[in-house]
Length: 177
Image 1: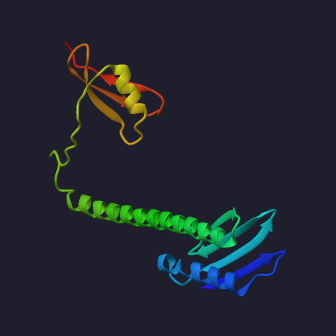
Image 2: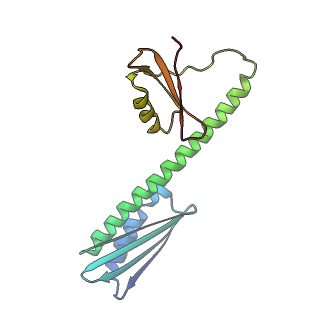
Image 3: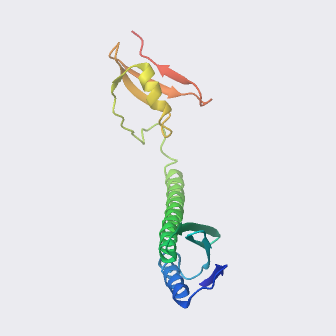
């Protein structure tokens, strides 16, 4: 952990240096001790600005806040940095978990190559009475699904609306008679 504290156009006191050192070192519980930090403090008008930049594991994050009190500016920066670190770590954890699941799925699918012509997956949908136009609007807002089964309000029959490969248009499956 390397911390560099700089004051622009004013002299830093030992108490503010110790305060920043203490606050920044608390970030090590999230990212370990292998990170670099630089804090730049300056006075703009009647506000005191604190900018803290953290570099760890190839990531660079920073926070800049201004307030009447330098200590509160540092506190706000630390809160912002903690949020950014948690966001980055959560994103990495999800990627790792997804890649692990993909690896398991690929191994499972290799094990199940012998099975053919069997139903191996079932997806349940709630089917609601809608018009085709309402179903289209719902499907437009849903980025995860490519189709939506629904009961047509006029005919009381199950229809399916689906997104075409062009991503702009839709298809509709209606039962005959």
